Image (cartoon, rainbow, N blue to C red; front, side):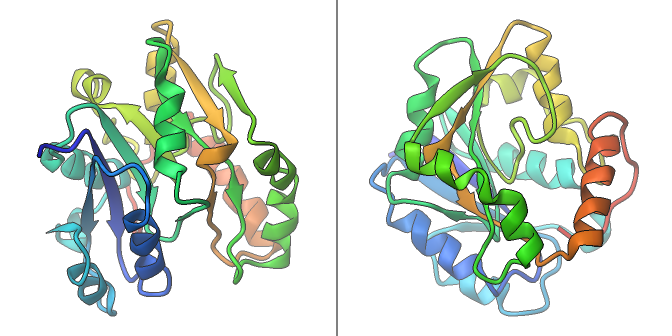
Length: 236
């Protein structure tokens, strides 16, 4: 059966969390989906772990990696008929109804995409846990909100679902090589009357183990990258 949804996962040396990510996807109550992994040169056990799952694995040379290129590459190979899910390899869905809850956000035809909150992983730094802690109460409330304009973190591809037909009409801009393609894509559709939905139930556990200084640097970087195309990137 042709899947309704494809989950696109970019990987590179993700052995710490990719197995748990794939296991949580496999437990989803919503079953009409496939998993598509796009690897850009893993040298650890990532490929072995992905190979033990039901995910379809594609590989690109590390020197060809750009954030939006890897996503476009995966989306091109996705067999989904309706939805494309962008999920970081070290993002863990918060529940077994995560996909079903996210797709429920598309009840309105004006919705371009659905995204969720972020909660630090168990091995996240204390600063990341403090930074994301304010969203934990929102997660427990199960609330969602309609977002009508772009901003930091809106429709971030750490965990987001978009309509496939909209991606086909306007692919991710590969000029944003080092990131920011998610914000640029959202702005394009906001300008055309679409909205996004932030769903607490579509949240993930996700972090990088960053200290306070690195966390501040990251936020300053994303604030700039989201507004102006970056031309080079390394890593995933």
